[in-house]
Length: 283
Image (tube, rainbow, N blue to C red):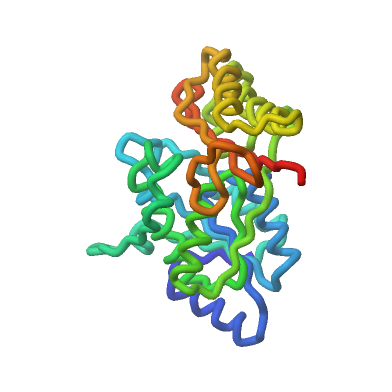
């Protein structure tokens, strides 16, 4: 695995790769890798000729009171994991490489970016869109791999790719969970043992939502109310939002008639976690 830190160098390397007709898979990350990230890496390794992973903790997607400085970092461990998987290139730029002095260009996807997580994290998706577009222009991948856990992010990035006519296909892979159901997240490292146990109520509420649909419930309000009731029974958890929305525009739906996204965010102590599931109505 080759580790590259400069844009000019990684562009040169990948230009050579493309000149030989090889396909490039790309997995953008903020590091502190877990099995969820590695599942994306393995998918890229199976479906493209050359796999590139980036590690960049993007300051533009953190709010002023969020955990940018505390966000977990372990580049040595991450590098070892990626090399073991067989990754070809690891791109690790610093802040000044991505946002040089005088940088003033940002990308917004209107309407989609201000819903769900965007309500409490203004500017977050502007930062995500900007860094992902920059990385796409640097790496020029054929396929880029993302996780379903960041469902809103995936919807927004697909819209950005479509609207800007980018030559990259976005693949969204299922959420990877612990055996007890907790969705893998780098922020899980912040949880105490008691908080981690409490956090299980999030995935349990999503399972309950699907169970209600399978039993015939179609009223989204009833489903959300039941999820809210379950989560509120856990005193360590504070709900930020629970919504059932369509899969394209992320608008709330009143009645379940086809596939929809049940998404939530909550604080467990000081740790903000998100989770979701795709609800399906048989037939």
